[in-house]
Image (cartoon, rainbow, N blue to C red; front, side, top):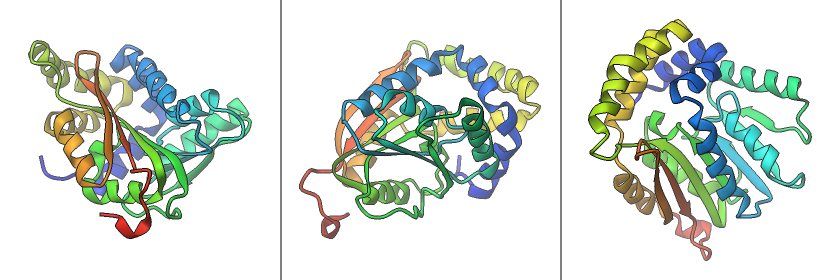
Length: 243
């Protein structure tokens, strides 16, 4: 599979935005809530003052962070798909989130954020959709302060024992079930293809190292179908030694 086309990915997410959360709950059997809980615990352990959630979509991770982190910690959610951000803002209005999350349109490959302005950056199931991962990782490293961490949740290649069953689900069941729920079969065929083509956790760890991160964690979850990665900017880093 070639690198994702940003315009096609944007259009795809715009189409499925209204039913995105429902489909996720059904397709994962709700276990995505557990994955996000682990991610927010990792972030909370850093005692950050400013957190940025990239590829925030409808805001699931951003809302989980807001519930977990103290009031004095700011939470910002960025996404390049405006219809997904509309869903996030509508949810925030209903929830009356206090203090509010700042939702903004933004491209991971060209973040309009200052150097070393975040203590932690999260991205859940969005790294796979980047047209240029090295550039995206370089941008994330640029906005993180020395000692700051990037925490990633992403699909990966499962343990060999369950791989045949998992890929059968991805290829034969997931697209059609999601197509019924969302009305967009093609979007979830892309999901299947992008997961199968995505590097394994060891390869992503090497990409993090190449981007200048110290790999702190690469924990497989749920039979290895998902991995929680943590990469830290070296505590002595400064803008002059960016890779």
